[in-house]
Image (cartoon, rainbow, N blue to C red; front, top):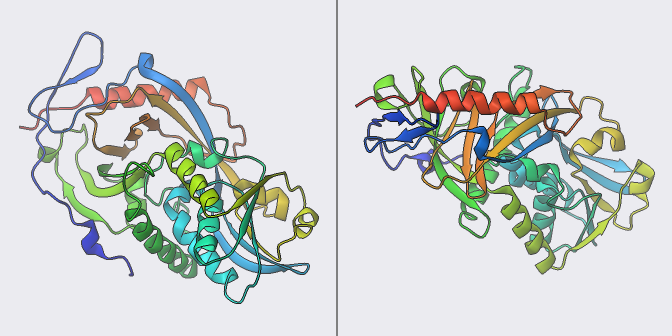
Length: 364
């Protein structure tokens, strides 16, 4: 394991005592005895709803080089719900495959988080880069992401090979270290304590992600759960982050050409001899990857609540607090290609979170 586990040490192991009272509005109100403020969940506080299509492959993401005519093509796509998390590390694997021995300029297909990370690494290595993309931020799938550093959506089928897990851990290690040096308001990245329901799919995924601080029993937390896992991780305000990444790319001399590439022939017509494919779901049609499928994730975003300084995940869904709003999610809809929020699903997400946070209890 490459990750320095000491970096995951918790700053405090104090017991958490919590209580809440419920006002007449049905919104939980926090009392003085808990350091964790319950989220004020109510339909009236929803400021927008969105749905994103995760580029998911059951066997894992693709980082692979091949010839395409007289071009060298390096694939970097299929990260499911962990695109933000693995962006720097997966892009490092891809550029390590493509850049050594290359001379001349570089093309990157796609301007989501994977394309921008790949482009920036190529620039840092001294190469001129052009991004070819059908859409720019904020109109990319990455803009819809919740932005948690967490391996969401992997290892659910239990079919990952040992080779894939090794690739995943290399990518995770580099991303973990890279994001740490970007923490702050410029990129919209911050650390938060995170609480995960024991036994939930999220808790099982965390078995492949080392920074578990400790397990908390019922007397140590205010959640309506028997036990939770607590760890610290980073959260990305995706809109701000992608704007800054694109700004960095332009400052470093990068060029962007907005055009849709419909076939491999369109790709071979590009002037660059080294091309990185970071098209996400677009790789299904562009390069015939039929294993790639959309997994829809729907979000309800509440008005910001600055006193909420933690995240929570479990069977009820997930809650990530960001400066641009409180993110509520909870769907993993396989092979759904419609990026339109479903009002019934959104209502369920809000309702499930409302019940969860209204059930905060006193443990003191």
